[in-house]
Length: 251
Image (tube, rainbow, N blue to C red; front, side, top):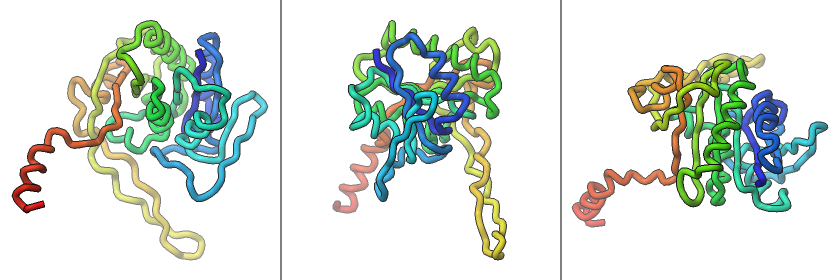
């Protein structure tokens, strides 16, 4: 077994160290993470400049790019052989609902999935790294479960959100779907020292679809949320309507 571990908080993040330590003994582990915090970079790849790989004192390798860069470079040139599993995290804060579209943590796991490798993204619900070692023990337990009893043939992609609790490994585990958030808060406008306007992206909106069965509902009720993800963004439910529209307008 060979496992590739990445994240989006950077190679010095406590969540990454905790996940690597928890997975010791499962197989040969390679760590390739961003040099700096790359939260919110989604699936972006760096195409306008070359990337460099470095090795930290603890043996972790890091790249001056995005989470997707890290996994892409690892799979296509850096590692001596293809890993059997890609893990990402543990993220400093939740990745639920619409957050998954922006998440670098999820993107790193998704990059592995795009290459046909099973992948899991791990996040803690609250920021601050409280009980991160407990979250890491839960992560290892889940990895052991899916390796012993794969949920489906071929590659799969899981998004896992873990409450910040010391008993995380004992919490119920729920298979969930993504909830939805309200639109983000407005940007925060300030001035730089030259008097020019600058803008900070506003906070994420509150959950608006958080009913039973969603990731928001599961974690709010003290459960670990496990959401299977897919890459296909096609609006399958509306395909017939769009085909009718195309015929009506003569396309």
